Image (cartoon, rainbow, N blue to C red; front, side, top):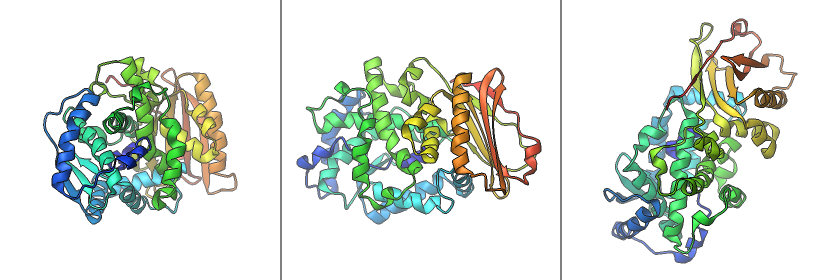
Length: 409
């Protein structure tokens, strides 16, 4: 869910530090908050392996001010034209219901989730005035890591890239995953996260799901939103544990993963397996409303949403090597999606699964629309094309021929 990463970073979804209830501190003033920040900074720096260059500010905010901040950041990240395009894309894929309005849903959800946030623009940690005492140390330790990250990389430039959803999602997984791993020994020195088995954090989703089910907005959110908020914290933490073992003493901030494929399969990161970029020609038949990509993680979510089987979804999405989609038409009712695969077997597996999933998405009785799924070879690489549009769409006669290029970064 990289398109909304600036906002996803605000949520404090941390199951691993629930024991901090027993270590609660009653903090009433900003002076108390500043003292906690000052005392935590050396511990955060030690566990992150990076020294602070400056001390961040820390300020209290009312719940109304928090909501105003969410609205401001949401509208900044998704101006009306992008919001309309993204919402149409998610509806066409079936990732959100046609009746769901993304803006109010996201604003309500994020306002509910926020227990504190770091704002790069002001170099400040903001703590809601109504936060529970037991949550305070959890939030401060987590957001201090983001403040530290911001002193070594430009957070805003990384997580506000337009048109590169998957790359943003991967970067967000590093930022939230690192914050999750680093804060554990800060809060509980006896805990050694580096000794946890690989994949341990992602397996905690069931525990988190039970906790989050008690929160009204999260419990009623679509799968794409729920999983997209959780993935950076838990999936990212698993990658960080792997990285710290593989590259002991090095900073992951020096060479960020470029895809969620690399987060899900760290060996692909070690092998420098970069995603293949899909390049659309200029549309000769219709207006391009929106363009972006899903990546392996959101491709998983698509299958999980349509088929209801998480294991099968992961199997069908594995072998992803790049993708690109666009929404066309004045009515935002045309979807073109091209995906690139590691080999012909992976492409065939995906295409077969997509045909089955799309038959559930678009039952044959929907005569007003037409869907076409086809395996292609583009520049020697296996590609699968999905087009879903009204039967009357004139573009059916001239489907685009995409180009591919390997990213040099």
